Image (tube, rainbow, N blue to C red):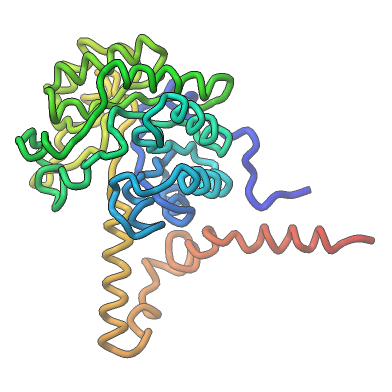
Length: 319
């Protein structure tokens, strides 16, 4: 029997990371994931911020529930062959038992990597980079320090130990993440990640880094796989070059851009359509061509009509 979407023999994130550095976009649903797949990306990260904005229309301050995250993970993983990384923030509970269960559920839902960090249920991260200025400058201002709440290093280690146990026996890996740099400085953040690596975290990540020098310092004290979170550019130049940090063990680099593209496109179409009281503007825009990455080609790839129609015919053939 044919299948609408075959997930058999899917390449795991582990297998990809062993071969190459991965450059990964942040997504929030099946459509954004399919766009990433069509563009040639080899993995995606389900961003808690993007999911919160798109699913409940609320800021990324811990308002998404574990059930909502698991459901989104299952929906996306069932419609793509790309390995799916899940941003699970603090683990959806302050007890390591909550983290253990969250990671178990996400791995069963199709996650191939899960980030767990030292934030708390009262994170304040959204307030810390509201407006983008403090986030993109990686500011360690007093205001940001006050707005970011994190747990102790021992509590983080307990959560990571639980997370690793939660995915045992699966293809899913645990990425330990820390927000300590914003409050206590880079050295404290590095120490936290070194301890997590010793406890079995498959990868480590220090938030709010933005230079090659910081990557060098991290690599000097933390062995193994490392993630560079949300690489960005300043005045048209990336803050780090992927090939430079690959040599330092940063074999996973994430980025945000799809949500900006989606919002720009929707606003552009909406403003023209409202002003014209007509769909002529959007109807005439073929997205660069009829097929391949043009609108009709993308629409076919998103819907997979031929596969579903063939499956329906196969079911209806009962003779």
